[in-house]
Amino acid sequence: MKVTFISLCTFTDQGIRTIKESTKRADMVMEAASKFGSKMTHLYWTQGQYDLISIIEAPDDASATAFGLAIASAGNVRMQTLRAFNRDEMNSILGKLG
Image (cartoon, rainbow, N blue to C red; front, side, top):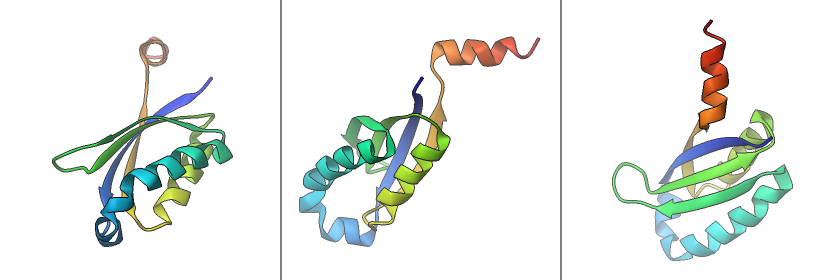
């Protein structure tokens, strides 16, 4: 089973200076995900508080964290990553409440 994460990203100063390369970098990031057993299923450039929002599927928390750290270490974005639960996962969680 894959675990879903939503990453909220903002460009760093470096990322803004090289903004014209943003879509090329995104392609490289999507390819890099497979090295961590993960897949970036969606990526959106957004307006407002965040510059990018991505949806990532990973085999586990450690793989998603390693992927996020690898991407952030390139210096173009800062990331806030959220664990997302689908309906079935949420029902399982709710079932544990008794």
